[in-house]
Image (cartoon, rainbow over all chains, first blue to last red; front, side, top):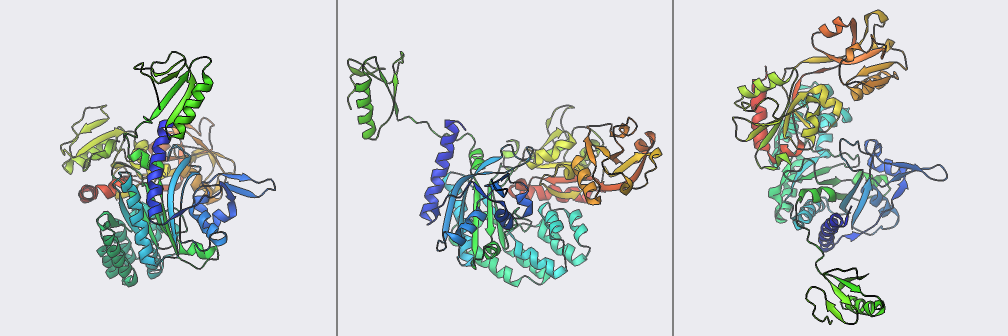
Length: 365
Length: 215
């Protein structure tokens, strides 16, 4: 990443950091290496297939940071027991087939809300993600899914093959669905779930069909009211074919997208079950945004240049005088560089006298 | 990015092969007539909101996955081989074929389970092939070819092949016998996951029409 690109990242990260601070999230840094067993326990087999593994000196398997949520959950179990809101901006590394993504290292900004009340916490996660994106000028939308709805429907229709069902739902494939169930009522309910997209009323339609989702209807209605209070409900849709790759989500899941980008720029959800797996009886919800995709979505944005940079040059025998000048300038908050003079035409030249190269005028600070 | 323009749809179709003409005919019956010239990769249609991108059938899931094209028509076998996450909105019911395991008629092998461990299997579908034999519990070495897979057994390159067969004529001509079906395939309407959300009304309207018109 060259300086121009790095500057774009810093600007986006800076805005994200500012919003996260305003919402009361404390930034943490997680380790680059972690015990593979712990990450596998949290994120699940499918995801952990794609992370880089290395061996420790004693033969134990370590993995490079491929995602942060599991690490934060573990941190809460040991070091940060009383923290409710944590955030991170960091790089992650995963083995991805070059066809899917050209980069194996990618940058994420994310937030985790631990211990909050279900509706208020889920609404906060969605609204915060949208506000972070708004802050850099990305007008995004969110699709909500629900692992809870899928689980209840599986129970209702006696479907056991979660992997097959999730694959069919995630690709809206009716063929795939038929492989998992031949029950006509189940086919009807899941077809409705896979092919419709709308507001909270969609859950009610599926609930009417299946007769088992009363609690979920109430949850989605309340969630929408909270999102309305945040002023973002018009950008939030229900699409129950939204399924995330990580195994740890057990209830609400969501994906964030913006027109023109072929891939979601972020996503998240609720992962109470993983917290319990780490021995913490609490609730948790969170999300991550891809900084790389945000930069891409902003395309030709003008990230500006460091225009306030002054270049100071010295002639032979005047280095000490030039050092005194740049020290004094930097002390006053100015940004400047110091180099030997090689015939440059712009900047400040320190010699017998100190003057501006462009105009020849005397320079004084 | 090609499909940025709000409300406009880029539709990826195979630029040649057995699926191109039926795909063009299906679109035409839906009122979307191709106005392009042969070899032009991006062409207008009679629907001002829809452009057609003509690319290799095998690459269509890639263009759709990245959102360069919003919609695409390609074989189910091809979508499965790339393993990319795209929505499969409809079975368009043309271009039907089976992906089969075939061996030389003289080999005496009657079932995929009789293929010896360590055999070489030539195919244009290495991912599907590996998953299929993994499931059977037979370790094979897959050899990826880009065409003319059916000659591999005769030339001694492979014991078996995994290849598409619609009538069985090609297999017969090469004295091969199909001994197992890996999957059935036909043309699918696929959609980029984000386009489905951001261009929902248009995508839904096209999907509905194509589903109605599919035989």
